[in-house]
Length: 346
Image 1 (cartoon, helix red, strand yellow):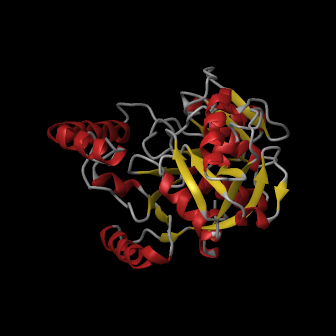
Image 2 (cartoon, one colour; image 1 turned 90 degrees about the vertical axis):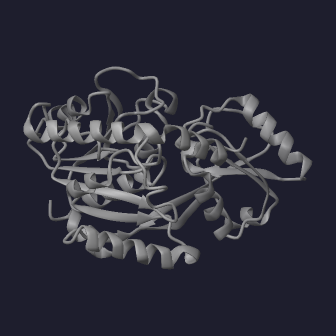
């Protein structure tokens, strides 16, 4: 049974429980607002990047973009992440101190390590209790602003700015709360947001994006809505060296382990690559050399000259051997200058 079919069946079966889960999430938010559950305040501003839906909306590239903007403005940001998928389980796990990376992707998790590699000079810290990790970044690393990755539902840490992401053309999925749908919380939770950003935009979904932007502006007046588009950055090999665009003209076999693999496939296609096969792994998949051997064998059946994957996946492949060359297609986000101006106001 295909993944989407399984998901639809799971949502159908879980629909009777959605009102219960939604009520619990509303009660939880009310407890944080009233002080029944403790929410810690830091002496520096906190910017949260999060989403309302389950799955990928581009939080990692957005977190990287925000940290770069703050760094360019002369700030000392630190990124705080849960470190999902990483084996490091201390109260504070220092992925990068801003000068060097200290934990690999297996220990840190793929996304924190990708952020650390992408942001020289920016500390990246993980921990189950992110308020503790954030306090460490301020006291011990000299951070003067915190960027909280995947933080919309993490209300144990007070924030000064809540950015909520939606990915086109998915937006809010079926509009129902888990386990009957894609929403982590009821729609009313968006009243906590200070701004919205829509990612995954392409020529095919522009009209739908504009309609959804109008919906957000109508339902949540006064909150700015930004369009965040992916732009091609570079192609790199397994050692991290930049390779020429001519690689895209070769016969390639694609693969990724992302929450929304279709987005990566569209990005590769938009750069002119014609893939002769495409394999999908679970999100945060920890690759083995056996995986790469199987991918190479499948690619060889089509006469492919190499494999291509995402930057997030490549983070976990650097020390593995592979019969075929592996390339990663790396992207950056592009947002209007008004978004950078907003960040510089903190």
